[in-house]
Image 1 (cartoon, protein in one colour):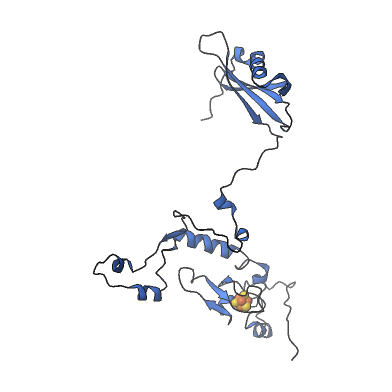
Image 2 (cartoon, rainbow, N blue to C red):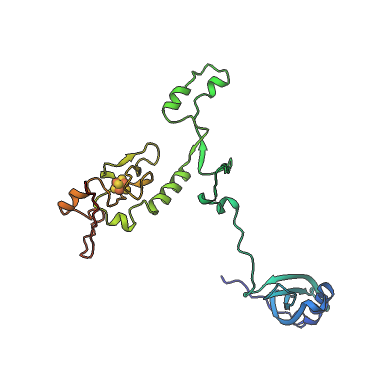
Length: 259
Ligand code: SF4
C-alpha cells in the first residue's frame, strides 16, 4: 500500500511571511535569502525553505516548519534548522574507526588491539584453567600448546569466512589473470606449503622466491608461471590446464638462467 500523501493546509502554505519573520529574528536578515518553496510534512504541517546566505554554506537552506492546530486560525513556528541542499558541500558519511583503519595504517610501535566483542574471534581453550584454579583437573598446558591451542581467543566462523572470502577473491585466488594463465595449480606445485587449522582445506603458502606470491597465502587453485612443474607442462602441451583456457591468443613466457 502506498503511503498516504498529506493534504496541504492553505494557512500553513501561505505562512511563508510568518516563517521568514521568525527566521530573520533568529539568524539576522543578512543570512536569509529568497523563499525557495515548501514541503508538506503532514496535515497542517509545512516546512518553508529559504536560501542561506552566510559564507561557507553554498547550497544550504534554512528550513522553517510551521503548523496549525486543529480548528485554530493562527499558524505557529515549530522549528528552524539549517539543512544541506542537493548541491551542498557536506562532510563525507562518518565511518567508525574500526572500519576505516587498514593494514597500511599500522606503523612500527603502533597498537591495534582487537575489541573484546570482535566477532572475528571466539574464546579459545587454554587447558590450564583447571590447574590455575586449584581443582583436580590435570594441567594440560603442554598438550594444549602442542596441539596449537592455548590461545585466549581463536578465529571464529565469521573470522574464518571473512578471511577465506578476502583471500580467495583477492590476488592470490583462482580468478586473477596470472592464475588463469598458469601451467598448473598451486596444489600440485612443489613450492606449495600446507597449512593446518580451519583454513587448511583451501589455502597454503607459496615458498618460491621467484614467484610473485612468495611468502603469501595462496589458494589451492591459484597458480603462476613459476610452478615447479611448469616446464614439463609446457613440453607436454598441458599448459593453461588451470582453467582450461586454451584460447589461441594465450602464450607463456619462460625465464631461464645461463649457467
Ligand atoms: S610457485 Fe606459483 S604455483 Fe607454485 S605455490 Fe607459488 S604461486 Fe603457487
